[in-house]
Image 1 (cartoon, helix red, strand yellow):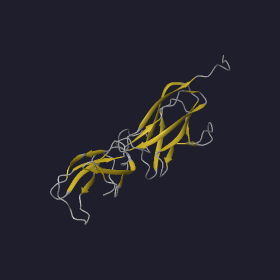
Image 2 (cartoon, rainbow, N blue to C red; image 1 turned 90 degrees about the vertical axis):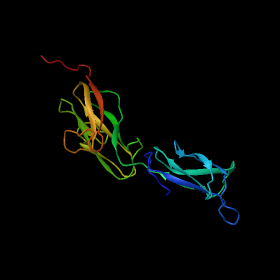
Image 3 (tube, rainbow, N blue to C red; image 1 turned 180 degrees about the horizontal axis):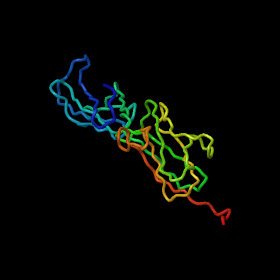
Image 4 (tube, rainbow, N blue to C red; image 1 turned 30 degrees about the horizontal axis):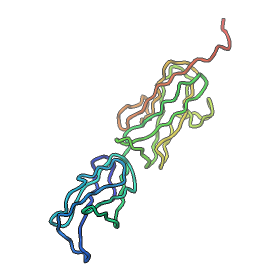
Length: 219
């Protein structure tokens, strides 16, 4: 097979066969070394000898999602210069969300967040669309999420969608009530409270909302 999940377990088997000029298999003890141009691709074993059937087999695994990985081999230190196949290691299913951690904001302004979906090995997931539900534990009632950076009340949302072909989505958090720490949560659960590690793991961030300078007095 030419594809294997990038989970460190699913493997692609590579077989090197030694033949003569007429296509006859040569059972020899020739030394073989197999390698790839991929990132963190394990070749197990990476080297050995042709067996009595004229072949040497090894397995490729990785936890890094990547495509078009070229396989190379040498036999008795001579490069195999033709027939070098390419293989793919696609990402696994969605396992968790992550959130960026923007700087604290002043009351009446917005923080920019990016939510990303990852598989169990932290590879970005891009296949299919995914709804992400947004929550805050702000004590006030003036907080809201936006999918556009357009201020209060213009385009408030309670969820955003990561589109097919994308691994992340930008959204904005607005608040005008000061707080030392508000927890923002990105979840796959549409019913509050968010469900933590159930199904897709939720992501959280803590942000503060700072007071503005005094502009009036109340007696």
